[in-house]
Length: 122
Image (cartoon, rainbow, N blue to C red; front, side, top):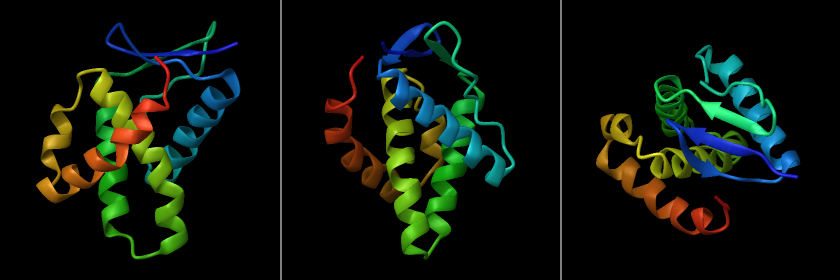
């Protein structure tokens, strides 16, 4: 079994159910820590429709937090999740808000997620 993640009616990811559950629960945990809505709703009928406004805001906030940390374990915990989020935004054509981040940050995440995207089925 698998779950479809969509943004604005575009399928952006189709992971196994366990991976989908882990992703949504990570989003909710990080949302709680950041005190910002993740735009990631519960999975319903093997589908998770990401909010096209809230999810990009959440990813930008999370990326900025990552930039501000000088804590190896925390950075490592954030990097995998942020990378997945960047792939989803890219596939959904919803990267406009990422332009608010510095060019060095965008370059880092673009390079970081290129290979990751190849391992994420649609």
